[in-house]
Length: 198
Image 1 (cartoon, helix red, strand yellow):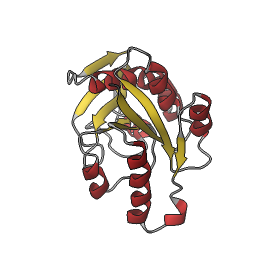
Image 2: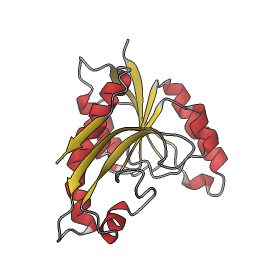
Image 3: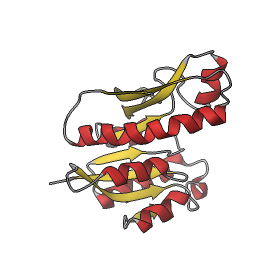
C-alpha cells in the first residue's frame, strides 16, 4: 500500500514537480493532492497537467485570523487523507497547534544548511556571513521554525562573484535532487540521513 502524499506550495512548484516525477511505480508513495494558499500559484497548473488533484485555500480572506485559515487548511488535508505532507515552497508560517496535528508526518525543505539561517533571505545572509559553502536541508516539521530533526542536506560551494540570485539558482537543482531522495527514504521508513555535495 503506497503512502499518500500531499504537497503544499505557494509559487511555481518546482520542488513539487521534482517530488511527483520521482514517485514512479516502484516508489513507496504517491501524490494525492497539491494545495496552495495562492490561487495564482504556477504550480497548480503543473499539478493539474500531471493529473494530481489541486485545492486552493487562499490565506487573504483570513487576514488576521490564522486560526480560521489553518482550520480550512486542515479540513482540506483531512479530505485527502495524506500519510505525509511535504511543504515545498509553502510561504506561510504554521502555528504549533497546526503542526501538532500532523506531527511526524510533515516534511519541509529549507534553503540553508540548518541550523544556520532559519527564516527568510538565506542566500543573502550566507553571503553576508562570508560562508565558503551554502546548501539546503530537508527536515521534519515541528513547532520550532526550521528546527525539526534533519533528514538530509545538500551543499554547494560559494563563489567569489555570487549574488543571492545566482546562488539560489545554483542551489535549486540540488534541492530537486535532495527532496525526492529524502521523501523516498521517509516513505519507506528509512531514517538514514541523505548527504549530497556539489
